[in-house]
Amino acid sequence: MCGIIGVVGTPDAPDALDTLLEGLARLEYRGYDSAGVALVRPGETWRARTASGTESVRALVEVCAQAPPGFASGIGHTRWATHGAPEAENAHPHLDCTGRIAIIHNGIIENHAELRAGLVERGHTLSSRTDSEVLAHLIEEARRAGADLVEAMRQSLGRVRGAFAVAVVDATEPDVIVAARRVSPLIVGTAPGRTYLASDVPAILDRASAFYAVDDDQVVRLGPAGFSAVDLEGAPVRLRQLAITWDLETAEKGGFEDFMTKEIEEQPAALANTLLDRRRGDGTITFDELRVADDELLEVRRVVIVATGTSHHAALVAKYALERWARLTTEVDIASEYRYRDPVVEVGTLVIGVSQSGETIDTIQAVREARRRGARVVAVTNVVDSSLAREADAVLYTRAGLEVSVASTKSFVAQVAALEMLALRLAQLRGTLLAVDVEAHVRGLGAVGTLVAAALTRRDVVTDVAKQLVGARDFFYLGRHVGLPTAMEGALKLKELTYLHAEGYPGGELKHGPLALIEPGVVVVAVATDPVMYDKMLSNLAEVKARGATLVVVATDDDEAIDAVADYVLRVPATEPLFSPMVDVVPLQLFAYAMARGLGRNVDRPRNLAKTVTVE
Ligand code: AGP
Image (cartoon, rainbow, N blue to C red):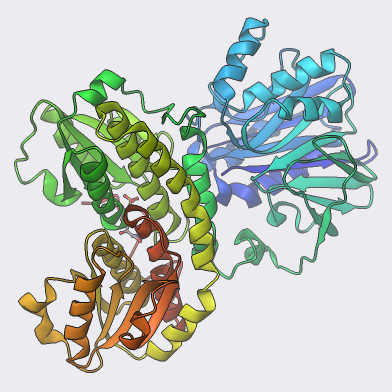
């Protein structure tokens, strides 16, 4: 998830650079590992880029102090790297071979490798390792063939598979910006004598007076006096006007009250982006950045996953997938325990470190210990070039986008999806699943985002249940099989957001002791969506019900029996058990959120916690 911004003004008001830098500062929360601007005026394109981690935009401001004055138009970008390390050479804007055309891009070009190969074959020189740069050279080719900037954009996007919010400037038409959108957000803003574009409202909130949404496969042409729009076939279209009444702080949260709500709502997009360019047309699975050869993956005999917190729960789900699909013995270890247990690492042991931030020292130390003992290490992380990514032999990136709220939400579903794709890749290589079954699972995984979106529509029901239970003080979360890590994740969300005690527990284990704790007033939240485990779970629910517990059950839409058992039912669409944690976790996230709001907690910054724990 990156931030893009652009402005077209008139030569008598050459303030484009101020607009871009101020807007980029407002878009930093969308990603910050590098930043850049490109300014245009007749015959001249001036570009500056920086890659200084969280200081990238501030470093860019310093560099731009040397910019020549007098530019009325330009584009800017702040990056959340997906392809290519967060170094200056990979920072946007990217130029074509002439240095006259500059583009910025938010999204993923799935077929960038084949497009790049064709461009190089036709004599182009590409200077970055990003997918986005190919767009600058495709537009260059169309322009050289006589297309105007809109036509050049349309022709180029016609060759692209993937997601984009892209904008282009050309020094031969400095009072025009052309932009287009598919999946990644893009808005247009207007004011007297200026027209703006941005990833979302905050970047231009106090400069534009009217706002419009660009929908999928629409191409807009911005000039100082306004804009026009066409679809990818060139037919005129009208943009939807947006009624924006937000203040800036609300705008940075996408109009939501807090980052946690924004990030919960972003889960379908996080899943789509994580899976986007990993499913080839022929059904095979590919991870560009994994950098582990197939024959090395075939040598894997045992998997150990090390992680903490929510990432540990995603790892627990992955265990079921790796053992079920790839028939690989899989252990999951709390990272802070792993290195002190004198772990056994034999030839063929693959250790996977899972960490959203890629900076959790417990996980980094565990991975270091595993490497010291001779294991091959793969990192699964959401931050390109993070410490964990650099420690590992290979990396598999989730693409959930920046996660600001301390409570992990979208990164959990993205981690489960990435790990399950890895399990399917191993099954494909090891032949433990038929090709037709791999394809079926990959298709099913691709549909989970829609189920998550459906679960999100039930927020009000969940909130009503939370309102009725806000006085409760003691919670058990029960699950069986993959429902257990889901239950554990739900309990963790409640603990860290409400400061109430909650425990995730195996449904079948309660009777071996903790059942003594069940009495009226205790709330038991159960995940009962797996048809295989359903009858056993019902027995567990009868045990706690008989002892006075209040029962909240996550159940599928088609479950008609549960109403007779549960005090409250949180409905979710049914799905394949191994996919269910990504769907069933949604009502548990919403429940914890609603309970925390009912208790007046700060949901984005709970007490005692930090987003990344860099101390042991
Ligand atoms: C989860 O909501 C918590 N914020 C915490 O448990 C977190 O998952 C844990 O600290 C691991 O963080 P990481 O994924 O960045 O390594």
